[in-house]
Image (cartoon, rainbow, N blue to C red; front, side, top):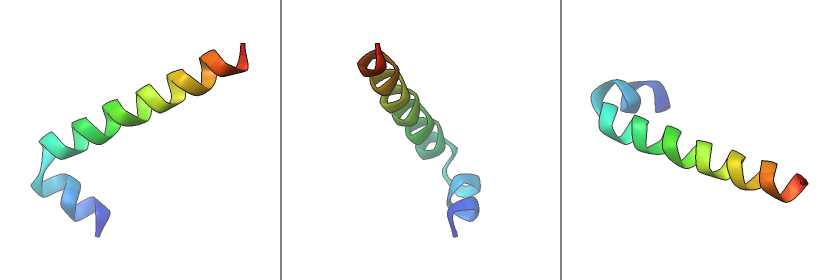
Length: 32
């Protein structure tokens, strides 16, 4: 399901990836 959604909507995929990067960045900063 997710793979098909990413294929049909690349813009949403990039948005999700950007959100994931932000979340990981927050986690990394909180670790410090």
